[in-house]
Each structure stands twice: as structure tokens, then as C-alpha cells.
Image (cartoon, rainbow, N blue to C red):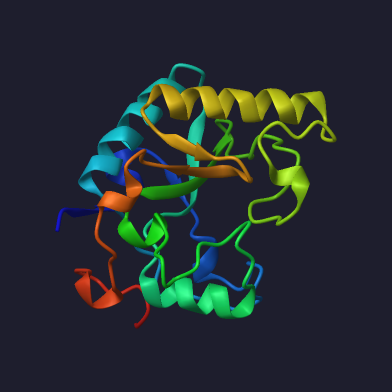
Length: 185
């Protein structure tokens, strides 16, 4: 398995894994540690996206990367909503290491206005939502353009979620498959 750890010093990104904190929709940490992993194919496309945003003096902020199947089950048990979470029995692109949740920030680290927060499970989080400010719509379209130019597919219900086009062709990954556990300290 070709899983790579994404680190700020190597990839020049900001990483704040929301599920390693209690600041997520479950109200408790899902991950015991903040390791951000991607399959090498996804990591290459992330590199391209990073290269594209740099010319605009922006940075990528990562909220989630690979999500072990154990974590997907925890999220599903809390909120079994197929509009925003893949059923763990079918497997999520995150649990294959080929999906990423992210946003853009300026040079000072301030997140660009996207109209909603990450993981706001409402229609306002959909691509093409018009009941958000024009600034937020422009920022979402800009992010969409960057990510699709870099070779990513998008999920219509979540402005922050991008995945490889052939995500289902990659195997599911469990915590035990990782070099450093995300679920245990």
C-alpha cells in the first residue's frame, strides 16, 4: 500500500485535523493523533493544487485526509446521514486514502469565507448554493477550479470535499494498516 504522511514542512500546507479535536459534529475526538495520510496518487494531486494556490498567495488548510474505517464507523454511528457520510459498509473515499477535506487561507492563516463552516450538514454546504454571500460563492468556485484543475473530483453536497475520480478502485484502509496509528496513542 502506498500511503504517504502529509506534513506541513514537506507539503507546505496547514493541517488541523478536525476529528482529532472535540471541535467536530460529534463533540469528541475521533482520532487519538493528528497524522494526515493520503495514497500517493492523491498526494501527487495535492502537490499540484498547492502549486496552483501559491501563485495567489494562498495556502491550503486540511481538515481531514485518510479516515480509517474504524473512524468512519464512529462518525456513522453518531450521524447516519447518507447525504454527508458514506456508509462504512460500502467504504468512504476517505477510508481509501483518496479524499481530502480542505479550504483556503490567506498568508496570515485566516480562512477564506466559504459561507459555512467545514462539516455544516445543510444545503448551504452544497456546491452552487446561492443563499450565501457572493464573496463565499466566488471563493468556493475558486477552490473548485483549483482542485479540478489539479485532477480532483468533487462531492456536490460538500464544498470542502475532494476525491480522486476512481476512488472506489482503491482498497479500504484500517488503522492497523498505517505506519503510525490514528486511533490509538
